[in-house]
Every structure is written in C-alpha cells, then in structure tokens.
Amino acid sequence: MTETVKLISPVDGSIYAERPVATDQAINAAVERAKAAQEKWAETPIVERGKYMLAMLEALVAMTDEIVPEIAWQMGRPVRYGGEFGGVKERTNYMVEIAEAALKAVPASNPKDGFRRYVKKDPLGVVMVIAPWNYPYLTAVNTIVPALMAGNAVILKHAAQTLLVGERFQQAFDRVGLPKGVFQNVVLNHAQTEKLLGSGKINHVNFTGSVGGGRAIEKSAAGTFMSLGLELGGKDPAYVLPDAKMDHAVANLVDGAFYNSGQCCCGIERVYVHEKVYDEFVEGFIAETKNYVVGNPLDQATTLGPMAQARFADLIREQKAEALRKGAVAHINMKVANDRAGSPYLAPEVLTQVDHQMSVMREESFGPIVGIMKVRNDEEAIALMNDSPYGLTASIWTRDTEHAVAIGNRIETGTVFMNRCDYLDPALVWTGVKDTGKGAGLSAIGYDNLTRPKSFHLREAI
Image 1 (cartoon, rainbow, N blue to C red):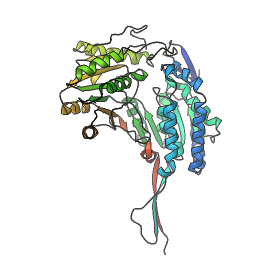
Image 2: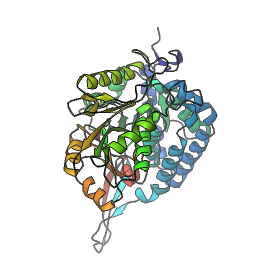
Image 3: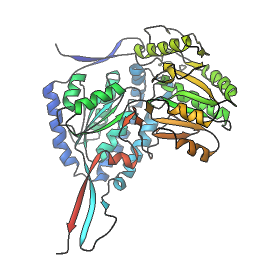
Image 4: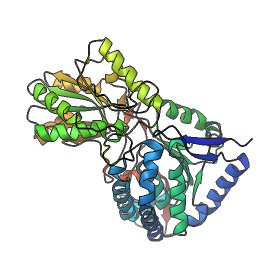
C-alpha cells in the first residue's frame, strides 16, 4: 500500500488533502534533476534569474482568491487577514533588487601591481528548504528566492500541515517557465528526509521549526559537511518603559502576542513592564485582548481562528493550568465554542503574577497566551529577558532611542526592536542566538549564507 501524508484541517477535523509520499527512486531522480539543472541555472545572468522570480511572484499573487481559504483550511488563519503576500512581495522584490550587488565579486582591499585578486561568490549547489506551517509562504520564500537568485537549485519539502503550499509554489514556477529541475516540490516522510540529508547530495538545508527538529537535522547531516540554516523558535520578550506611548504599546503588543493565534516564531510571549506604568498597561492590554472573536476562520467576523493542531492548543492549556497552580492570575477566561481539551479552538489568555518558575515564561508556547511581569528597573528587565534558552527578537517600548540601543546591546537576541515587534525587514539579517539556532537569512548577509567564497589570485604581469 502506498504511504500517504494526510493534512487534517483544524477547522473541522476532516482530511483536507492527502498526497502520496515520494518513492526512493523519485527522490533520487529529483536530486539528479536538481544537480543537472543547477549547473545551467548558475550560468544564467542574475538579471534573468530576477525576471523569473518576479514573474513567479505575480503568478503566486494571481492565485490569492484560491490561496486565502486554503490557508484557513490548512492551518486555521482567518480569511479576513488575506494571504501573506504583502510580506512575500516585499521580501521577493528586495532580495531581487539587491542580488547583483550582494553577489558581486569582492576585490582585495590592498591592490597590488601586476595582480588581479578577488573573491567570487559561487552558489552552493542544491539547497533543500524544509518549511513550516505557521507562515507557510513567508517562511519558505525567505530562502527559496535568494537561493535561486544566488544560482542554486531548490528542493522544497513543506510541512504536512500545509501540503498545498508547496504545490502552489510549483505551479507558479511552472507557469512562468522556470527551467525544469531548478525548483522542485517533494512530499517526504521524516525517515526519507533524514536519509536525503545524510546522503551527501544536498549542499545546504534551511529549516524553520522546533529545537528537536533542528537537532535531528544536525544529526542527519553529520559528516556531510553541508551548511545549515536553522531557525528553531523563540520566547520573545518585550520591555515597556515608563515613557512608552501607552496606547501604541498596548495595541501593538496585543497584536504581536495573538495574531495568527500566537503561532509566530517572533511573536510576543512574555512582557516585562516597569512598575510605574504596570497597572495602566495591564488594564489596557486586557481590554484590547477581550476584543478578539474566536471562531471558524472562514467567517469574516473571526479574528482568532483555531490553532493548527489540537495538541498545540492542549500545550497552552497545560501551561495555563500549571501557572494558575503556582499562583498566576488569569484575566480573560473567555468562553468560546469548542474550547476544550483535544480541540484546536482556544481563547486568548493574559496572565499576571507570573514568574520564571512557570513554563509559560520559560518554554516556547507558540499559542495565544502571554504572561506579564512587573519590574523595578532596566537591570531587572534585562536579566529576565536574557533568562531564556532562546534568542530570536526582543522589543523595547520607549521614546528614547539611545536608551533603547543601550538596553538592546545587552540583550541576547538576533533582532532588537523599538516600538514595534513581530516583523521581518528584508534589509536586515534574520538570525538568532542560543537554542533559536544558527545561520542567517534575508539581507545581503543572507546571500553570503547561500554561496561559498572562491578566491582568484591572478598574476597578470610576468
């Protein structure tokens, strides 16, 4: 019997899509096609590669009316928010725009008469993208576009929860006539993925997902000397200072905590508020949170859909229950249909009287729950923000830019925000520290991670 991958919709528990897993023969053929196609693709001028990327973007956006309800059915995001194509456009356009400059050979800084010396940036070869379900288009495009612009071939394995996203990328590339084999979408199980990574036939893998998944990938790739890009989650903090513009901080932090049902790698999971404005902030945060409407994501009135899987919602229920046992106070306690153990439907929750002995303040939640702690000063806030195994982003809410920079310099994180959160700027490198992983995406630095340096030392005068 043929093995399949089933996509169980969080909307109603039905099988929304089912696809056969690729055979070993098909996987080997895909890799060989990629290797052969990559050699010719690397010879294609960067300007021409860019034209393909922009045409692919246009083809993808043209599918918006079909894709938006597909996303809702696959992972639960409400249709009222549309697709992810604002960010997809911004990132694709920017990475295409900077490609020639970012991939240009770098001359030696100390010219020597009679010599031409420079470092060329060669493509790595075959890049595998293992994409997650939470932002299925945005996270995938972060690597797909720059990898292809750099002259690599790409093999995409998308999450089982968002199977159809890989197919949409394939359709878009096929419609614009991208040479066969340069981009391929494949359906693999975990064992096949591990075997492929250990085969030595993949030159680079980019993975966005759990710490456990990242460790499994490192183990699978051990000894191949392939390069890795790993974004493995976060427990992103915010610090609200006394001079923060309160209504702005409240609105943006509530959105940063609960948008996409909190299923964001860089979403806000813990908030530290200076004691001088703590009561005002908490009151505003609770009031704003109570405006959410939890329900069927296909309903335009819904602002918070189900989580992607029931087990993710049950983890949040467990974190809340543990926090309450240890003395936390819950402020929302919203009653919504189907919010029960074993269901992906979950109301947002705000907790106070929390501390770092509670898992909700230490372990990744990846759901619609946030803890708020009162702090006396910067020193306490910085210590608490750094008291985490993760380090993806941190946000500081103040009107004093230099103060924010001074605090940011002491936070163990990949990105420091001031007066905003939960956002990727393609002109800035996307990276993390500690258990959040390693590698870098977007910006010119992202291109350095998708190429290898090759030195040319040419004596011209003999």
